[in-house]
Image (cartoon, rainbow, N blue to C red):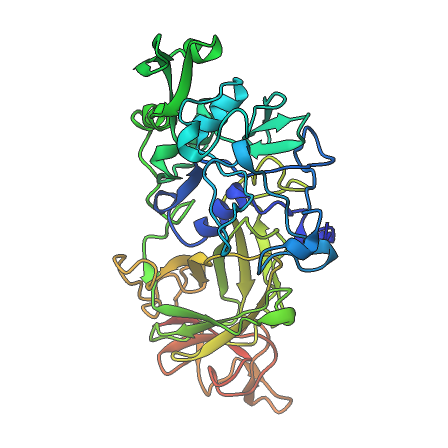
Length: 459
């Protein structure tokens, strides 16, 4: 084991499985646009040692000099000892025309192996009981956490990964619960039915109970047992998810665009450190302290941060467990950062967020910005929402755009020792060119001219 994910920075997420992959893609698309892949074939190894009935065991090819091109690179990347013969019905051949060990079988053949049935079809694949006899028993095992069945032949030390109706039902329930779009399987010819054998050993009717195959009166062959199980689950399911957002969407949008760049490659790509550039196209200045929020998927741990002074942090975690054994809990982490209080973002201006996170994500998505106490979506994500007018005075400083008692520049609210208007103290407001500004600290600069001022609203 490489122990890449033992460090706390990875949040214990070390199992990059189907559930992790689903959450990765969920960061940028609705659940309904994602399909889960399911194999209707096996993969397997011989000479397996260790593990639990072969699961998590090891099976390196005894002579690593015989590894096929592109496989077997050093002590930690040995090529595997793929199962052969009766355990490799759907095998490919190498450049020299020899069988390539892969433990590749249609599921109906694996079902026959589990019942000790030497299929009537085997001769068509060049197999006979004399040349490739059935040795030992193939016991079905099942891991409830991985939702994975497998066959283990203890005598031959052969491990074959499998699928069957029981495991497919669990996977279909997962898809329905997550509102995922569906299942993609490869290939239909690998699905199975149990067929009754007549007196001449010919397949006849389908036995939906599979009793014939369990009592020596039938055999498995091409069918639709798993496919029908999927159909039966999906036909009564609720509609698949059709939104990226997992929470409420603001009722108005503003024109702020986001571009992402600067992904490092090679050995310098961790931690992942892209630059998110926010461009203000609203037509108005964004005041210092404006908060931005967005979602990142739980495929990355909840420790995202930044190196640009925005104070990026996770404000709502979608996964708080110590690891992802059994699956990630939620779909998104909500993160937020704020413009520095002294930094207004003028119309046409950009703010560059130097983001840091530790495992791959897609997205980010579901951006929002809080301007003077009101939350807006971003136009590029929600082009059908009406545009909010952040310069109209609505919502300014919590909705207050009252000019009563506010001086107009250059009539400063504070005076110098000689009694002349000269400056503003922190929190003082002043009107200039039809806009109310508030001082972030002591200042005598032109209102709105630098970071010492925050825009309150336009009059």
